[in-house]
Image 1 (cartoon, rainbow, N blue to C red):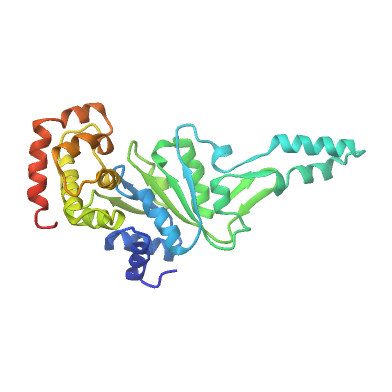
Image 2 (image 1 turned 60 degrees about the horizontal axis):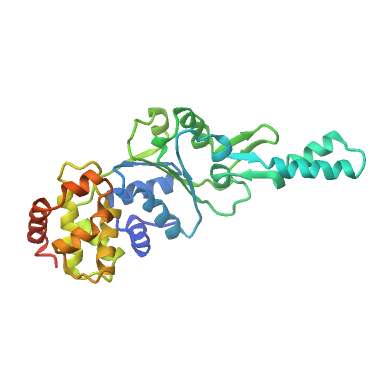
Length: 301
C-alpha cells in the first residue's frame, strides 16, 4: 500500500501511467478507506488503463467485468457446472445407492462452482485484495446496478445452495462509465467520484512520450497537437488519448519522424473510427489543422 500520494503517482508512473494529483488523491482515498472509485468521462481518456496500472502498481490481480446489455448473474457472479455435476451424479449412481443429502453436498460444492469476476474478487480464499474493474457500467441494465448495491455495501453475495460468501480481503473496486446513460444515484453514493477530462496538451504529450518512447520529440509533439485540434472539430467520434498513442505508434512504424499530409492520409483510420469523420478530415481541412498543430507544437519538439 503506498504511504503517500506522491508514492502512488510514482508507482503508477513506473507502470507508464501519467496521472495528475486530483486523480491520484481520489485513488489514494479509495485505497485508504476501502471505498469503490467511480470514474466517468469520455471514451479513451484512461479510465480502464488506470485500473490495470493500479493493479500492477500494487502487485496484485486485475479482475475485469466487462458490462453489456443483458449481463446477468450467471456471467457476472457465478453459475454451476451442470455437465460436470451430471457426470458426477451418474458416477455416484453407478457406485451403488445414492444418499440424497450426501449427493447434494458433493454436487453443490466449490469443485463445481464456476466463479465469475464478481465472485472471484470477493473469494474468501484470496490471500491479497484484488483490483476489481467493473468496466462501462452504463452499458449494463438498471437491474444489474441494483444487484451491485449489496456487493458494494457488504462485499458479499448469496448463493442459495451454499449460503453467503463474504470477502476476507476486500478488493479495490473501480467502476467506469462513458456516460451513455445516467447511472443511478444509489450506486454513485456508495463510491468516490472522479470525472476524467481530456488531458491538456502538456499532459497528453507527457503520456505519449512515456507510452511511445521511440517516437521523435517532433513527431510526439505534432501528433499530440493534431489530436487536440481534432477534438475541437464536429466529429461523430472524438479521438481519445488511446487513439493518440496508437497514431504515434503507427507513424513510427511507417518510419516518420514528423507529421506531414501524406502520413496523415495513410493513418487517419488509426485515429478516426467513423467513415464520415475520415472523409471530413481529408483535403484542405486537414491541411489547416496540420498547420495549426505544427505551430502549437513548435516549442515542445
